[in-house]
Amino acid sequence: MGVLDEAKGKVKEATGDVTGNEELKDEGQAQQDKGAEERQAKEHEAKAKAHEKKADLAEARMD
Image (cartoon, rainbow, N blue to C red):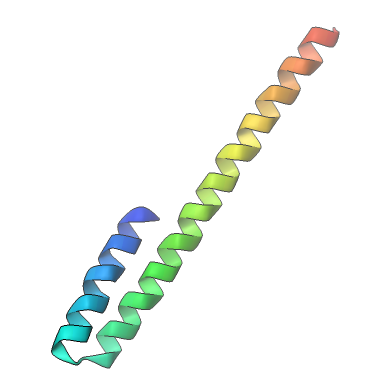
């Protein structure tokens, strides 16, 4: 869920900060980190697919 997890995490972290709830604040930060990692993985996956298509096109031109 990447971006959605990052947004939810920010809300939790801010809520924890305002209410003084360190556990909620930490949970929010962890959720943001998870979302950022998922987003980066999706970006890398998309780049890999683009390179794969480019390689397929180059191979097709060689045939």
